[in-house]
Image (cartoon, rainbow, N blue to C red; front, top):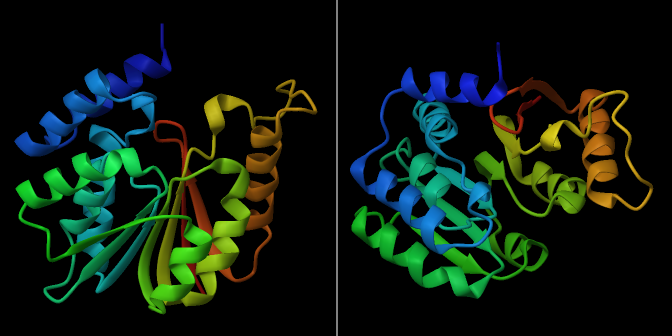
Length: 214
């Protein structure tokens, strides 16, 4: 009988392997860090890397670094003069992130900002080729409106966890107090109707929304 977990294992088995460094970070996160499921993981990490290689971005923005796995994946496709800015609000994660960035030889390509996205992003004053948002879901729309004006025409945005454990699906009983689920549902509907972008919702892991700015 089909199950999503079996499908994910099959997908992982038929996806190019992660590097030894990424595999170690993956394991370490699951053993030592709370809420390890927030890590992008093998298949999604390879997709982020592949998209980055396709775009060859000069400037990448990530909101929600967690332990740095997705940042390392996105950095694999940077243009020769490319930089990735990643924003994390939890200072307790900074040491681990910087250690793995240094081990990957990317200390001059990945810039970690500890703080709130609403304060950090406007100060960067960059034009983004690729943006990955994997932060607090209730603020997806706020982050989207914050970064979209700074994305170049033809640039890409990705937002994680848009299936939200299936809670966004029609018919799922959602309590009025479940603000995160209501926010994700409303955001998905907004993007579907937004003439500024074209979008594809990929049912990978917990849902990945891919957009291209028109």
